[in-house]
Length: 205
Image 1 (cartoon, rainbow, N blue to C red):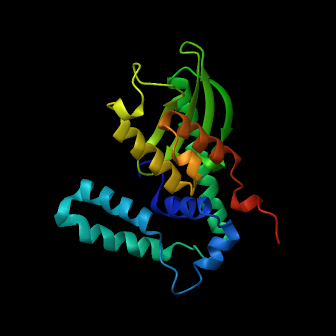
Image 2: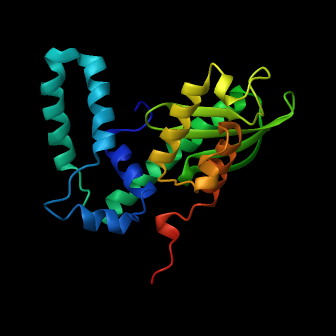
Image 3: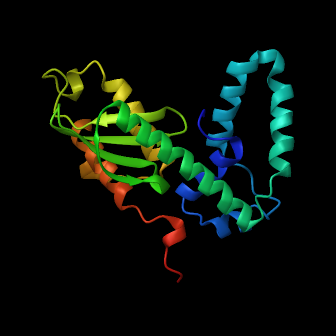
C-alpha cells in the first residue's frame, strides 16, 4: 500500500467505486457493511511482509481496533481522509513526473492520474497511482523493440498493470476494446479514467 494509511486506502477505494463521501458515511453506519476485501488483502500482505507470520495476527488485531475507532460514519471525517489521500497522491504523481523530466499537461488527483509529455522520447506519458503496484509510469508506445504484445517479454507485466488499474478504478471495456493489443487498450483505459464521472460530482437524481 505504502503511500496511503489504512483508512485513507479504504475511503479511496469506496470513492473510486462510486460512493460520495456522504454515501460512504451512510454505508458504514450499516452493521452489515464490511471493509473492502481488496484493500484488506493488500494491508494483510503488507503486515505479513513487515512482521512475519508470528506477528501477523497481533498486528491485524491492532489494525481492526484502529479501524473500528475511525469515524467512517462521519461525513466530515471521511471528507478529510479523502482530501489527505488526494494530496498525497498528487504530490507523488508530480514527483514522478519531475523524476522523468516530463512536461505536465494535466493532473486529476481525485482520479489518481497525471498526463504528461516526454519531449526527449516524443511521446505521451500517463502516470497512475495504484494501491497494489504503487505509481505506474506508462509511456505511450506501439511496440516493445519492434515486438507486438503477443511476442513481447513484458506482456504478462503489462496485463497485470492494466488489470490492476481497471479493478482499482472500476473501469470496464467494451468487447472491441478488450480485443485490442495492450498498446492500444491502455490508451482506452486511461481515457476512460480521465473521463470518468466521480461520485462527489454526480448529479442528484
